[in-house]
Amino acid sequence: MTGSVRQISHVLSLAGAVVWAALHPRYWPGTVRNVLARQVLFTGVDATRFIALSGMICGITVVMQAQVWLTRFGQTRMLGPILVALVVRELAPLLTNLIVLGRSGTAVASELASMRVSQQIRLLDSQGVDPFIYLVMPRAVGLAVSVFCLTIVFITVSLVTGFLTAVLAGAGQAGPMQFIQQVAQALQPVDVVVILGKTLAPGILMGVICCEAGLSVSRDLAEIPQATTLGQVRSLMAVFLAFLVVSVLVYV
Image (cartoon, rainbow, N blue to C red):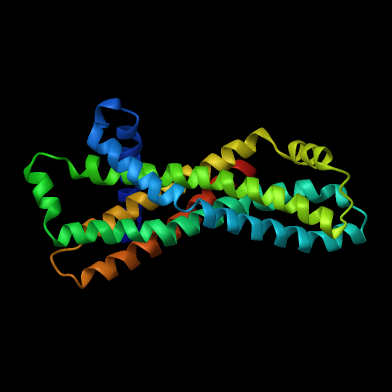
């Protein structure tokens, strides 16, 4: 138990250090900005199509399941609030975090583990380059920014495909303006806090944990897959815990 508390405190300290360093321009020379750009390109831009496809499937599935009950009870006007409650507040940020973790979080852990084994980390250190600033911070920030942007893509695609599915399924939607009004009325200012909390915080934690797992290996190549798995499992727990904390703070 003491070890778990110590590990959580260590991760939170690293996450706080990432946020603090990211807010200071002096820690963003050209080389660090290039690392950030590459991370956002790989994590965010390259995953846009897959996220859009996932959002489309999610929107169709949720509407098809909800449409049966809404039509039966004559509550088709509740489709917008249901999409907001399920997709915007929960499914979109959760599924996006899981996709980014499986696609990019493991890649970060594996990349840094390979650099550790090949002594590239020691070479950077000997040249006076801070591994935390050059390796950890831009990757963690890149993951967080990508998770946020991809979540917005997921939500947009889900709402659009959800509306089209409702129209095709005969859920009684009068038109796009009515649907937009339903969604707008269901959205609350606190939803902005929820989306930020469930994207940026898990993204930072995911980046920190995966980077730490990759940098924790020694010179043995056999440790690389172990570090990747360790980073993935710990990041998964961090995502769920972050979601729990945000939900408790906002809704309880």
